[in-house]
Amino acid sequence: MKSFLFVLQNSPYRGNDAQESLDRILITAAFDQPVSLLLLDEAVFHIKQGQRVNEAGGKNISAIYRSLELYDIEAIYVEQESLTQVGLVLEDLVFPVQVLSSSDIAALIQQFDVVLNG
Image (cartoon, rainbow, N blue to C red):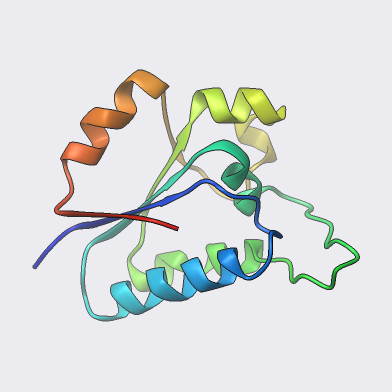
């Protein structure tokens, strides 16, 4: 069994990238693989409370993130600098996350067998 870390960096409403990434994450977890997420840069908006869907017709994906626990995906990491850069605080997020500084990211990545960018 291999451990997977999915690293997301893009805005949740940039094309179909977010939905495709979530599909890969859920499929991997459905096969009983240990899965964790790392949200960097604008990807922190994936789990922001009170999201407003843009005019392009995108879906509010924060509800999908709330279901991650059903797939035993409980380790979700957010970079503190990314939160600060986009003006969010922990209370703005839909559920608790583990916050890491940018200097801790490399050590986190080394803990996983497979690292995939989403």
